Amino acid sequence: MKIALMDSGIGLLAAAAAVRRLRPDADLVLSSDPASMPWGPRTPEDVTRLALDVARAAAGRLPDALIVACNTASVHALPALRAELEPGLPVVGTVPAIKPAAAGGGPFAIWATPATTGSPYQRGLIRDFARSADVTEVPCPGLADAVERADEEAIDRAVAAAAELTPADVTDVVLGCTHYELVAGRIRAAVEAGRTVRSPLVLHGSAEAVAAQALRRIGATPAPSAEPAGTLTVLLGGHAADLTEPALAYAEGRLLKAVSPAV
Image (tube, rainbow, N blue to C red):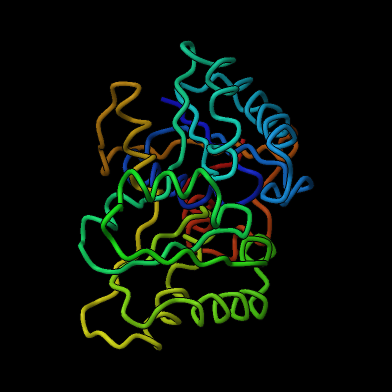
């Protein structure tokens, strides 16, 4: 079994680690193009072109499924990716976890890139799944870029700024960019520090859901104890590479490196 994941940069690490936990025996292909970051401010046409290039590089390794581990690419390029690659290669997009956050019943916030915040796409999800909920859209300028560089000070500044915009009574926070899942602990700590309610803060990412959906699409089931560990292939701009230093700054990157020989 081989699962490919694509993103502009290292935001795909969270979903890749989720796949690894569900199926340690799966071979993984991580395809990205950090030189083209950020994708958020680009036009939909540019995002589609870049996403197709990254997806084609992944598809060239003949995976059984492709996870689009990027909210921006899922918003703008998913139809084009599916039109080109399906039905031969199942394509699984990433959707912000607004529906489960709304199910909690309390006020919640959606942390997302400035380009996604207030977008018709995100507003549509809010309208469809959280119509009666008290929702605050929180733009997080610079956070994805800081995570991509593993710039500790920049991450702290961006997280603190977004936490200041997050209402003190929220019960849940939706992580609307896959990069944010890599610093979920910092986000939790920053939001908790300013909250006025005692209930535990619930963070909603997408990694576990898209990993499980990819397995379902190919008729596979979770087997967390499966051995031996699968291989890891890293593609940067279509060329074979190793996990970058910033990737290894995160637990998800270290998990992949620790159990997977690069090929």
